Figure 1 (cartoon, rainbow over the protein chains, first blue to last red):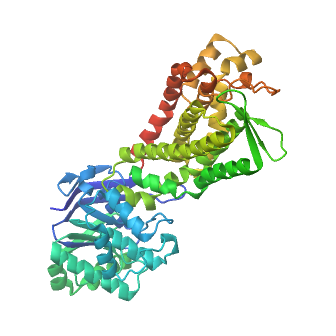
Figure 2 (figure 1 turned 135 degrees about the vertical axis):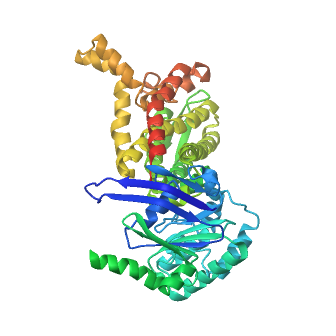
Figure 3 (figure 1 turned 120 degrees about the vertical axis):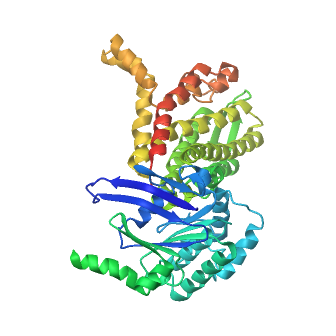
Length: 245
Length: 282
């Protein structure tokens, strides 16, 4: 088991600037080698759930086991990489320097790091390793962030809205890389997105989340047999609920 | 994590002003000015162009104050960035916990401050050796101790304020314009209380206790107050009275008790910052 969250809850009180929000998840799992997706509208709690897994936010209740450790243990994070939805790399660093620096923080194996950077840059069509981060466009930054995420030899990759700002060609290239990586190394992927086509063909397990609760989950086979595809599965749940509301 | 912070600090352009100014000053004095030994092995008079000679104590104290100001304005910007959720999410999703993050922050700041201070020392040493033929090593050691210690003491306040306010500018301003003067007042509270006629036993004890709760920048000033030594011959400034300290008395007279007080006075803010850091969510 890569990840197991049980009876997880987190409440944000209402403030002057923000509405209150409550997340309550009874059970959430990611299996080894699986491609798991969390789908839901904006503000439904996808990123909050991920931040709880990584101990960026503290749980009010419940427990999370991550890569055979309690999620609070920093050792749990040694075997995973995370791409946040919003990120900020040091602007004055060149891309290659940034990748080296974050590899240091990850305490990853730095053998042949430059060779691996070059290999990944080739796979991601990155020819701006010697440019400063501040000189990159939104799409370039997103690609660099993905490059940073896949640089190490991790068992688990968590990607929060990974294709934001990427053009169709770049998105396809990176998706293909991820599928290939999953096949070759049997890594587990957890992805959040609200773009259904991103995960249509690849997803092994899918969770639907709304208002801080998981409203349904299904395997790829179940979705195909019962709904004919991810899009109709998603729309069946969210359109009907919206109509009721 | 310490390496990461050190790299960020070395890319901080505000901090570059420190060594650049030291070099410019050395060039100015080297080409247009002169340095005259004050008849001993450690103090000197300095002049540039037609300006009147300035006693070393004035120059050194002025420069150190300026370098410290650059340091405390420039240094916290990377911490402020690292505490933003967009950066913190990247850092804390790695095998880094909040305790390591907190201690590495101080380690990096002290390391970089020490490095820039060393550069300043080297520039000064070359200038004094070349122009005045003196090598006041105790002055260099004192500078090497003074700037990093002062920056550490005020940085303790800045970190706490940054964790409380989330604002780089506010934390620097409050630390420099409020916390440091308060520490100065508390350090000499008895004198002030006597002047105001509030010197009751209770008041003295209260201010005395309070002085252990605020990082004592005034303590650092007193600890290493100036490097002037006796007044140069012919000088009408009573440098000796204005400044006493390591150079005059030598390191043998180092006030360990005061040094201990300075460190103890940092503890409450330091521990409170650590507590807030442990509780911080991103």
